[in-house]
Amino acid sequence: MAGRGRPGRPPQSDNRERFARLIARGVGNAEACRAVGVHPKTGKRWRLGRTITGSGVRRRHYPPVISARKLEVSPRFLSEDERVCIADLRRAGMGVRAIAGQLGRSPSTISRELRRNCERASGQYRPFAAQRLAARRRARPGRGKLNADPVLRQFVVSGLEKHWSPEQISRALRAEFPAEPGRHLVHETIYQAVYRPGLGGLRRDLPPVLRTRRRHRKPRRRGDARRAGALIGMTMISQRPPAAAGRSEAGHWEGDLITGASNRSAIGTLVDRASRFTILVHLPGQRHDAETVRDALVAAMAILPAQLRLSLTWDQGKEMALHDQIAAALGMPVFFCDPHSPWQRPTNENTSGLLRQYFPKGSDLRVHGPDRLAAVAAELNDRPRKTLGWNTPAALLATVLAQHTAS
Image (cartoon, helix red, strand yellow):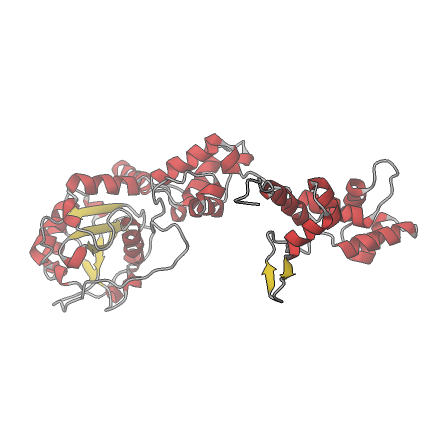
C-alpha cells in the first residue's frame, strides 16, 4: 500500500493494449486472456467496467478501460451466418457452385473461403474457426505507403513545398514512377497525410502546405472588401464575341485586383482564359486608382505580341474608369461583367483563390515588389493543371507562340 513501504502492483498497460487488439480481431474473452496471461474476470472488467459497493452502501462505478465495440464489416465480406450455411451445405454434399447459388455469392468466393479457412490437418471446414481466421486477417494493420517508402514520402513532401495540390502530386507520381504502381497514390491519401501527419507519414513540423493553409476540413467564405462603382461607356460581356467566350483561342484575358488589409494595397491579376497563364501587375504604394491601374496594365500587356492581346474582361470596379484609354493603348476591347457576377470571370476568380496562398487576406501587399510577383507568377505558370490535361500554362502558351511564329 502506498505510504507504508509496500510497492504497488506493476501497471498492466501493455497487457491491456494486447488484450484490446485481440478483442478487436474477433478473439473471444477467454482466449484473449490466456494469450495475455490474465484472469478471465480481469478481461471482463477491462471490457465492461465494474461496480463496487462500499461499506457505506455507496456504489462506485469504474468505467471500462478498453473499447470492445465491434467494427462494422462491409457486406461484401462473408458473415458468420453465411459461414455456418457453407459448413451445413458442404456436409450435405453440395458442390461449390451449388453453395454459391444458395448464398447468392460468386463461386470463386466460396472456393477461396474453403481453400483458405479449412483446417490444414483434417481438411474440415469449421465456420466459427473460419470466422476468427478471417477477422484476424482483416484486422491486420498496415503501415501505409508514405510511412513505408521514404522515396515516395520525399516526392510528396517536395511537391507540397512547391505548393502543388494533392491531386497534382497524385498525377505527377504516375508520370515519375510509371512502372511502379505501388508508388501511385490517390489525392485523398495525401490530404489525409496532411491532416493527420502522424498517421499519414509526413513530418509533424511541416508548415501549412495546402492553399487554404488549413490543417482540418473546415469551409470558410469571406466576401470581397471592394465595392464596384459606376463606369461610363462600358461594353458589356453579353456583347463579347463567341471567340472570346470560348477557350479555344489564346489571347482573351480576365483581370481583377486582389486587395490587402483595409483595401490600402492591391495587386493586379491577368489570366488567359485558354492557357491559364497568369501575369501579376505591381501597383506601387497605396495607389490603385484608375490612372495607376491604367499605366500598370498597359506596361504589363504591351510586351505581349498582338496575337495575344485579343480581349480583356473585368468587373465594374472604379479602377477601370479609364478603360477606353487602356483599350486604345493596347488595341484590344475591354468587356465588363454584370454587377455582382464574379462567376462570369471564372478563370480569374479561381486564380485569385490560388494567389491567396501567397498573399493572404488581411495582409499588407505593399511588401511584395515586382521580383516577388514575377517569382510567384512563374511558380503558378509552371504548375501542372488538371483542366489542361496536366500540361502547364507556360508550356501551353509557349506552344501557341511557336505556332504563331511559324505561321
